[in-house]
Length: 282
Ligand SMILES: Cc1cc2nc3c(=O)[nH]c(=O)nc-3n(C[C@H](O)[C@H](O)[C@H](O)COP(=O)(O)OP(=O)(O)OC[C@H]3O[C@@H](n4cnc5c(N)ncnc54)[C@H](O)[C@@H]3O)c2cc1C
Ligand code: FES
Image (cartoon, rainbow, N blue to C red; front, side):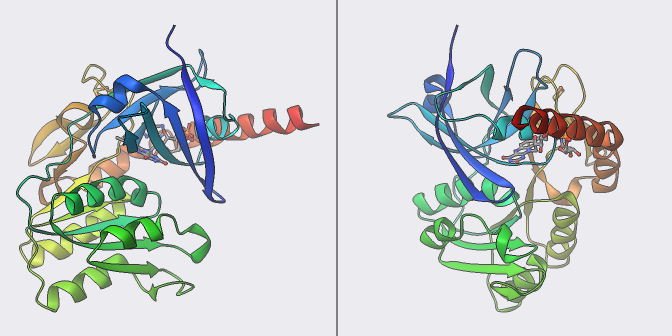
């Protein structure tokens, strides 16, 4: 049986963890924008996480996850040397980066973990990269140095003004566009509501905008229909047709409604998992 050993684990902030996993076959093929579906144990739920980085030489894949519910809570309790039960990928289509000369990459919260590998690849291809990263508050900031190293312009925004500039990512993007920056494309990754508002802004300026959609996924292979979205009036499956889509065509209101369908069940499951870990500690 293939073992997916945890090679490294680091807390990036109180709710976000970076893990490096030994997965040579995935590391060999992975591209920015793609994701894996993992299971922590045999009876575990399957959850999708973006490939935040890869090391083809050593056969390592990095994931960055927010501890938000039952499975991410369990994953965060695993330690270096332990193995994940399942780690399937790379899934989804890579983000299209070829031919782009000047791009604004916008990340919100843990979405910055998904935005960073895309920004890095664009930088490596010689593209001018303007990055905007938005967080609620200073304690939640992740990957600031990493973004600074690969961006021609980097703007840090916070809701409460505790770091960077007080305001929303849309404020920073509007300013950059108004200052005369002509982007081939804006790539935006974060909470759906944030992506919706960025798309409304870029539509005003007629700038092509790509969003990375994160609906509920089960199999990740186009079989279950769990991740379906309406894009340009057509049904699309985020796992095989995406996760990147033209943001101006996505029906965000429908996507947000579908994503919140399981909230009561998810809250109950997380409480049960937290209680389980509390009992183990006692
Ligand atoms: C393509 C893709 C890439 C993603 N990449 C990342 C990433 O790099 N880092 C990160 O922190 N998160 C990422 N997510 C979101 C991540 O999958 C969820 O946070 C995770 O599944 C939560 O599981 P849970 O059991 O801990 O929480 P739960 O309590 O079960 O759920 C909390 C919230 O997570 C979302 N969620 C739950 N189950 C799923 C599922 N099976 N598929 C998709 N979303 C789900 C829902 O919005 C839900 O409200 C990604 C999602 C998708 C679809
Ligand atoms: S996750 Fe099942 S169809 Fe996409």
